[in-house]
Amino acid sequence: MATSKEIENPESRFSAVLASAARLPGVRIHREEYLRKALARYCSENEIRRAIDETPAAAGIPLDVLDKAANDSINYEAAKASALSAAAGIPGFIALPATVPADTAQYFGHMLRIAQKLAYLYSWPDLFSDDSDDLDDATKGVLTLFFGVMFGTQSANAAVGKVAGMMSKQVAKKLPQKALTQGVIYPIVKKVAAYLGVQMTKQTFAKSVSKAIPVVGAVVSGGLTLATYLPMAKRLKKHLAGLELTKPGHRVAEEEDVDGEVVDGEVVEGHESFPTIPGQHDADDTAAKLEKPHSS
Figure (tube, rainbow, N blue to C red):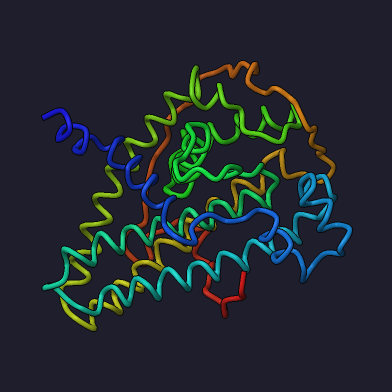
C-alpha cells in the first residue's frame, strides 16, 4: 500500500522518471567533450581550453557566441526528440502500452541532454562528475529546478537564480550541496517536482491521444514534441543566459565551500503554464524555428 501511494505521489513520480531517464544510454553529457565540440566553430583553442579548465565565462567568451552554440544544440536535440517521437507514434493504438512509456522516457532523456548542454555553456559545473548510475541529491535538485524553468514555473526561476548567485559569489566548481538538499531551496525543489509530476501525467495523456491513429499519429506526435520541446529549451536558455554566473570574467576556484551561504527571502509562486498544444507557448518563444540541425 505504501509503495502504491508513493507511485501515485506526483513528486515521487517525477523523481522516478528523472532518475530513470538519467540512466538511459547517451543521456549524460561529457562536459569537456561537449564544450570542445560546441565551441570549436566559434572560439580559439586557448579559449576552449580555458572554458573547459574553468568556465566559458572565465574564458571571456562573449554571450552572443554562447547563444549561437546554445541554439545549435537546441536545434539538434529538438530534431532528434521529434524524430524519435514520430517513430514511436507509427505502431498505433495497439502498441500504446509499450510506446508511451518509451516515448516519455526518451523525451525526458532529451530534456536532460539539453539541460546539461545549456548548463555547461552558461558556466555551471559538471553535473555528473562521478561514475555512479544514481543521481546525487544536489544534482537531482538542480535538474529538477532546470526542468521547472523549462515548464514555466516562477518558483524554479527564482530558485535557479539564487543558486547561481551563490555560486557566482563563491566562484566554486561544485553545486552548493546543502542549499539544494536542506534549508530554503530544498522545499522549492520538492514543490517543483510535485508540479512537474502532474504536468508529466497530462503530457503523457496528450501523447497517448496523438498516437491512437497509426501514421497520422506519428506526424501529430512528432509535431507535438517539437512544439513543446523547442520553446521549453529556449526558455531555459534565456534564463541561464541572463544570470550573473554567465557574465564574462567570472573565475572559479578549485576548493570553495558554497554550502554555508544563507538564502534569504521568500520565493513567490507566479503563473505556471506548460505548452501542450502547438502554438500555445510564450511570445518570447514564437520566433523559435527549427533550423537544419548541427551535430552537437
